[in-house]
Amino acid sequence: MPSLFDIGKSGLQAYRNSLAVTGQNIANINTEGYKKRDAALAEVSAAGGGVTEISDQTGLGVRVDEIRRAFDEFLIDKARQTSSIYEKTDAYVNEVKDLENLLLPGDYNLSSSIGDFFNSLQEIAAAPDDQAPRIVSIEKGKDLASQFNLYSDRINNLKERLSNQARNGVTSINIIAKQLADINEDLLNSGLTSQASNAKLDQRDNLLDKISKIAQITVAYGSRGEALVRLGNTGSGPVLVQNNSFSNLGIVEKDGRLQATIGLNNTATNQIQGGILSGLVDSYSMADDTIKEIDNLAIL
Image (cartoon, rainbow, N blue to C red; front, side):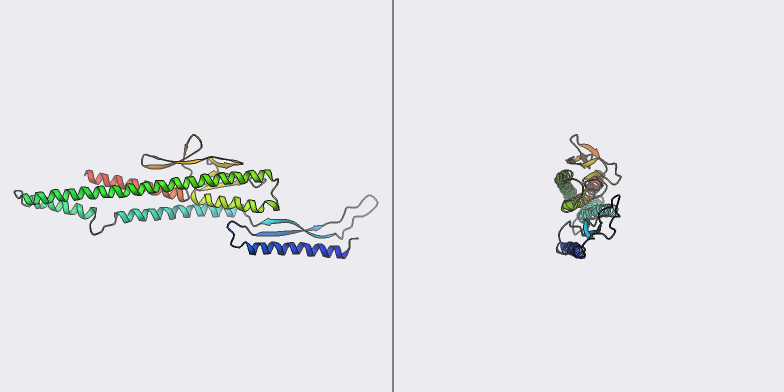
């Protein structure tokens, strides 16, 4: 029969470890990427009986079976998808506001220049023999051309800034993907998911959260906690990270649009439908469509 003191001692040790886990949660409340831990307790059963004896059913006490992370794959995936959509919308709204500010009427703008130019033409029609209205009309035409050029330069500068931001976003994804591949390698080399890898799993999830803010992704987890990351929300998009390897993202300008590419062959992909990168791509398209409309107006 086990000692009552041994059983009591096992209980004290188990709950001391549980309190230590609680303390760890409190201490890391502001730690980036930290997931709450929970100590799972399990009975320490007695030894089994033999042919001539009956097993002792009283047990030997309690022990900490594992330290579990607060992790729900379904909820985390939904949170990441929602975050991607929000970041896309936020980036798009902010950039479109900048475009709107370029086009809003002010004291002297394209709209007023067009009005002044056509008014000067009416002055010529009213007095065709007078040279003064002709001179004024020529100057108004120069002002109008200057306004068209100014708007073109401003929008082209906006497009260049959006393109640079998109490239910076792609660079950030590639850096994070490399870090995630390294963590996958550590997880694969450390054996089955265990208490010792909780911190590593926190790092994994933190990197996945950062990627999802820039580009929409779906994630599948292996038996050892390694992450298989695909672009898009369908689960069948191109692979970004698999085991200890990753594919580089790129961005190219084509036909007035920003196009994301992946892999050594720079294969075009349309799977990035969320995240900051998607918002920048849509903003770039809006800016390009706007400048085309202004060019058409200038031709007319």
